[in-house]
Length: 333
Image 1 (cartoon, rainbow, N blue to C red):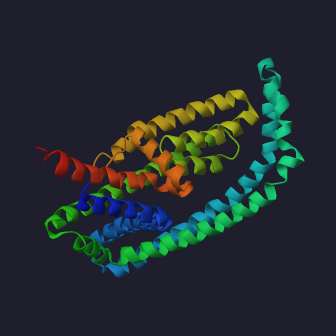
Image 2 (cartoon, rainbow, N blue to C red; image 1 turned 180 degrees about the vertical axis):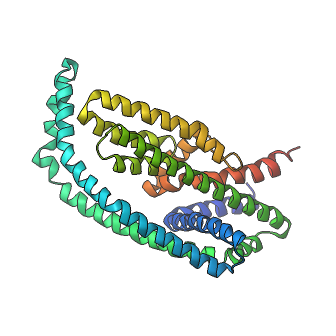
């Protein structure tokens, strides 16, 4: 290995180590980029209807978002709090129902005998320290959310200057390619966010209506969980289904089966109709790519990595298509 190759190798190693050390800063920065793209989509929609300066358009968008959030809070949160409290009261009933089902199945007696052992005092003693750690993590997450929000507003206020910095930092022969790449990433990410938001909102209302018609307890809480986890394809909808299934089981196994059918119909509707239709003009991630990105970033960065895995995968997919495939592979002789 000559001196030039050694220098290049050491440079990549140092960059990799520096990236790993600054992974949380980079995660916050990427989260701010995703949030700023959301704001930029709304700003451009508003500016297409009204000839407003970007600063005024941003203030109007933020005001509308704050007003909408306040209205949703006043309409849904009181009922949601009531249902969360009711969920706490239903947990013992659910546990008793599970024990009853297990006791009627001889092959599951071993599981029933092991359940009380999981709730001994020795096992519950560390709960206090875990709750303290959870509270500290929640406070840290809140600070990260504030940083992301502030940085997103600053990026949305003047995206062109930040874009110019990135383009200027690249070699002159590649600036046009980088400019096109940034445009494509912006379009793909904005389209993906818009499509997934519409899809998640649709699933929320359809789940709420379906569970209400089936008279399942805590329909609103279940619908919010199902709608929110739609942003996490493959993992999210499957995990979200467990809550309404458990609540329906408290009433009867027949109702649980009806809820399962409802969720299967809605999941297939979202996966094979809503999402492909909404994302037909942008980037539609393959389920395998979505799942592997969630697993990989979840293992590396925990829950924040899972939440940002798909937007990052969208950007990387565009980058691979525009740079690796078109500029490298297609030009290979």
